[in-house]
Length: 66
Image 1 (tube, rainbow, N blue to C red):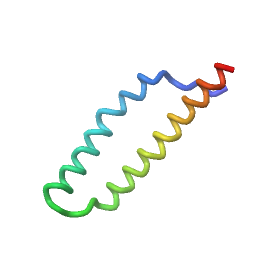
Image 2: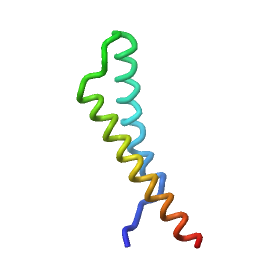
Image 3: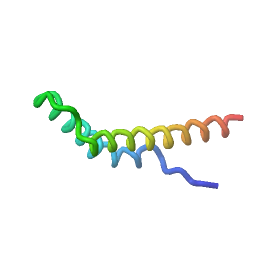
Image 4: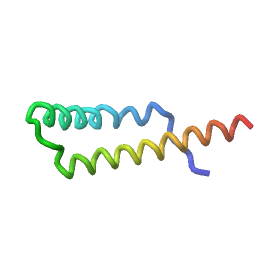
């Protein structure tokens, strides 16, 4: 069975990811420009990755409670 790391492991990725999100949104707010395509792709990837990880954790938590 796939061993999922503890939730704290993923916090290591949170700091740079949220820094990039903050920089992208700050840039868009201050310049009034739209986000570049690579920025939208990054946010889309983060969203998909988050859904996958959280879904796996929730699924695993409920499987073990039965």
